[in-house]
Image: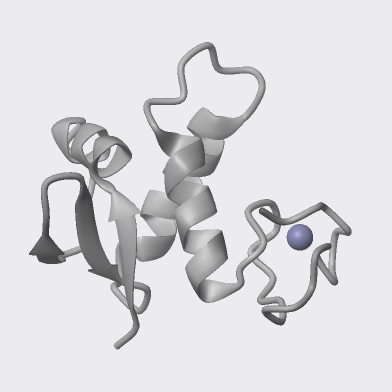
Length: 98
Ligand SMILES: [Zn+2]
């Protein structure tokens, strides 16, 4: 299990749309802790990527969620490649990381 701390906003919105949502292991005022190995983790991330895209007027906190995950797991927001912590650009798609 690998818990990541993410802002509540997008997960709350995702859950309110009745989509499968990762189990919340811990909650504070502004954050939830979820497991990156949760069966619904990738679905949440893919939903967040959709709302974070430039075509959407409102991101519902999607970008903040993606960046939190990117910083803690070393994942690229764009292509989900796992990068080393020291890499400033994605080794796969060359996108600058937060
Ligand atoms: Zn990438």
